[in-house]
Image 1 (cartoon, rainbow, N blue to C red):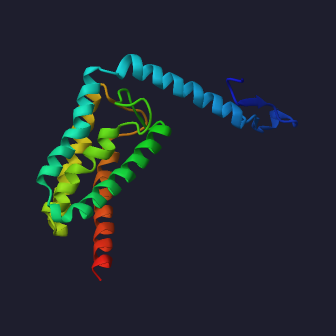
Image 2: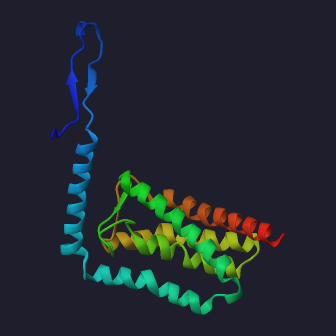
Image 3: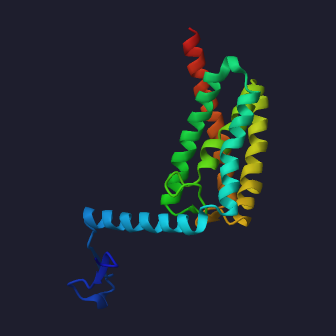
Length: 205
């Protein structure tokens, strides 16, 4: 298998006239891509098995993944359980997609995981992006109060939580900045709230 997929070759014409070099691409086949994926899978599993499993960060992430849900089940309005779960799980699904996208694009990465398979950071996507915003959605029905609370929590997530994860060696920024996360943290809960309210209004008709 070739290590480089692109080779540089000179143009047929005279390069002294200021013409640039041409690049000819030798694209990997599907089988080669699958082989690379297999190697990556094996490397990630080996790293998880020998580095992540049963480490301090492993137990920390495990607690963070499930403890907030236990708290939410105790505090939730039982009459609105379906609506709240719809809000939280939709938010979690979108967060998981965006997190996987950013990881695959090498914008950021996670050094420690609970599981050796995607999603890259289960607690952040399914728990920490769902439960706190679900409580805000439930307790603050007015748009103004909801938005204020979302902005405050988003600031905490972007500028405190992310840096704490970096200090713990769980999270690493590659081609990303904390300030970029801030508007995304705000936009996602607001969009999901709008979707949930529309669904609730349509069902009530």
